[in-house]
Length: 213
Length: 213
DNA sequence: AATTATACAAACAGATACGTATGTTAAAAC
DNA sequence: GTTTTAACATACGTATCTGTTTGTATAATT
Image (cartoon, rainbow over all chains, first blue to last red; front, top):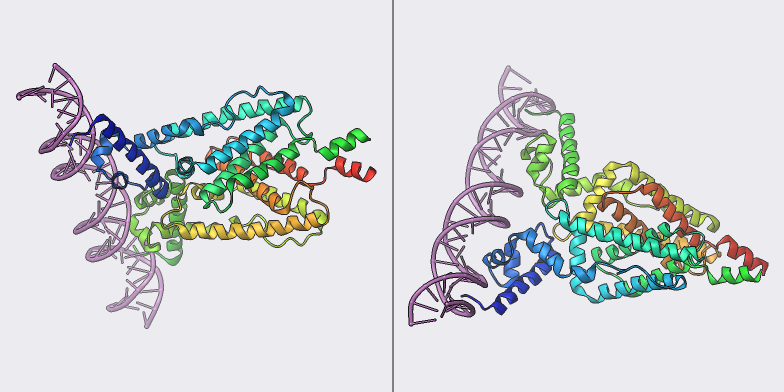
């Protein structure tokens, strides 16, 4: 039953799709390759032909959706300082919109949140860490730029603002993904962002009052 | 080799301790009962004598540390409205202190964060949800009390403040527990809380300015 | 048109984990 | 002091999963 190149690519993709669903439902460690094979309508033979083992399958799966998933803020912020806070808030909101709309990403993210990492998935963990660190640096710089020109409220330092933002996003997403998404991620998330960023900014009332006095 | 009651209780405890370490290191699903038995210096026979299976062992383990772990805010807040925000902030800070000092709780929490839940651990998930819901209601009420007497900044509603606080705590703890605790949980956490609660409060500048105008 | 390599399915072998059944020893119970 | 029973250890059978090997039909190659 030799298939054509295109057909083989199809089965490869169907295996990846099945793996995504099965890993999401049963967890990476408890799911067997036979589970994946049955879900894909093939045998383990097909899986072992396209992938070397379960870890490799998971890594390939991770790579397929990795690129768009990586960064909330993709590059150094080159905005005027007055717009920086607005830009970060919009980027974070946009990132939430995309996650809310893309079930693909939701499953991958959930799998990553739930997987133990400890065993042979260390490369994934390390990559995540690295992306996270780069991200933190960029946010720090952006908030520092805002701070240097007086757009960041005195309560907040660049570092503390970065952390507050990251923790809020992380808690928000964990809550939604791990605990059965019982609320509207995009609207509630952006609402929370709005309030947080309001407290980052000089509040209008304060600013007015200060200039008036 | 029949042991006395006290000795049996000892082995039972040593099994629980071993399970905590092994589950923490290998994850609940990938750890075998033989791993736990070896770590405890017994055989699987002892485990099956004290517990019916791995799920039961995990549930018992969860119950042993459940009570102190449950609530950040233990009961309805009966403080004067002026002190409510301060009380919540202190409670959250105290909860972080306790977590940072108790490796026991750290492991259990990490295990809970990493476990897939999907299979036979649903009762744990449901219990967590229930505790979480009660907690949310209490926080909502507490923030509402603060709001009703003007101690909550206009930017924030009771609900949004509750969510911001919970998400921050969740993100903070996830970051620390899942990603190798690369910072000081208690100090950095309380610092973040301080800034968040500052933005909850009427900022002194604003309050003064408003009363002055 | 014959050959070869591809894309799998099916069969096989080894390891591992689980649950249970059985054995054993010493503490309790009488 | 004998019997019973609690507290395990050991042994067994079975299911499952993994990785590899073998088989096979067909696309691609020549």
